[in-house]
Image 1 (cartoon, one colour):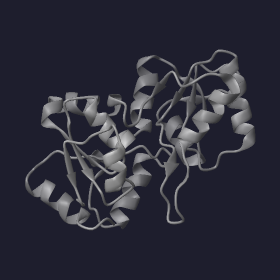
Image 2 (cartoon, one colour):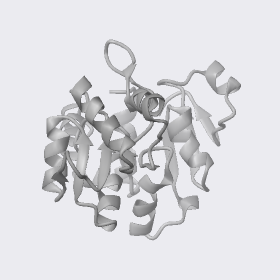
Image 3 (spheres, helix red, strand yellow):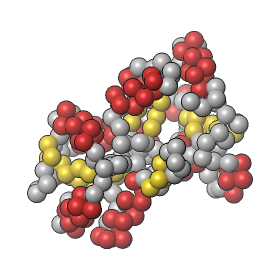
Length: 229
């Protein structure tokens, strides 16, 4: 757990602030993320967890696209089925790309074939790497590049940070203007970029991916820069 994180969340509850732990990591379902957070001692509920697969599922439902070919691990695939989506490998209405940590060449082969036939494809997020205990590993952004190099196509829509579609439903739900919201994060091209493209206040913490020298060289600027949460 990041230094100060548990106390930070405790203070948010004490001051009766509405808060969400927002993650692009679509290799886990909201319930799986919640279990990990609770194991770490964060003491949050499912209503406090927001994952990039959620706005994607909401979008597919709104567009009445039920038959989907997805590239996802077993748990996320089960989540899609629980949400009413049906896996269709032949004539899907849409293609969904998640951060599949069980990805195989056969899955990518099938996906690129379907993309070439003209089926629209959607991605949960665009992060290039995912931090792990062993260091950064390839994330969905690298998969997107492979698909683009193979087919010439990019996702029709990307749902995670920095796309505002992941936070707009939350603001609408609570009847809040973007000016009444703050995003705290350590990644410039997702967390801070999302806020920069709106009226949301951004707070960059230097305890994660972005270092001070990275920030000084970046065109993406935060409203506030602090050492940690």
